[in-house]
Image (cartoon, rainbow, N blue to C red):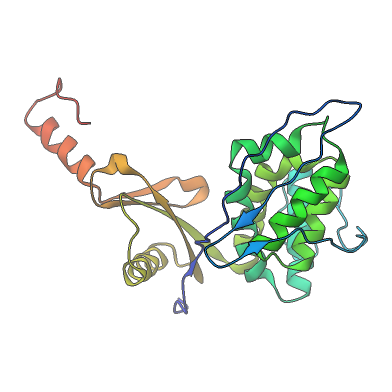
Amino acid sequence: MAALRNPVVLQSNTATVAALSTSSTANSPKPFSLSFSSSTATFNPLRLATLSSSKFIVKPRGGGALGARMSDSPAGRYATALAEVANSNGTLETTASDVDKIDKIFSDVQVYSFFANPVISTENKRQVLDEIVDSSKLQPHTANFLNILVDADRLELITDIVKEFEVVFNQITNTELAVVSSVVPLEDDHLAQIAKGVQRLTGAKNVRIKTVIDPDLVAGFTIRYGNGGSKLVDMSVKTQLEEIAAQLDLGDVTLV
């Protein structure tokens, strides 16, 4: 079993999206502006060069050039195309970080609704996307990929593309994904210990940690890994209290 070099912890501080509005009319959409700011700088819109989709070839079926299993769906084919481009230019790990940022950005209902709104013009969507690219510091090929989705009117697939990319990335790199849920953020050394434990359990070459904050756990943490998170290691206080309540036959007691 190969030794774990460094667990990949994907935690990004994505800029907050301010006041997205989808109110537009079909004939004369209102100008739309979105600013991203931090304590040190305000990011202005970045105009990308004209894009070419020649590098992003969405294959119809089967595995990609990397030999990874590809989902027979539009999202799966887009995800595999992005993974192949990233792997070919040696940026697969960094692109995975980009995809994690994209996941966080588009999990905002207002952001997703804006880009999924067919009334808002492609040009307005491109302008807002430029600001997202600039503030999140996405790689050029990741930015091009998002613009291709906008131009093809397929950005509504972004959530599924993120999931499929994660599957393809893990297959290419022989990586086990472990989702660690806790009440408060865990220290890096604790996450490293968890990664080593998951590696021992699975025999994976690499372990990728994603963290989730879950106040319902009371204290402690849980780890989900395996196919679709099918395996669970539960070290939460909530579960321990529920087990104690069950042993004491306190079935009518609800823990909140």
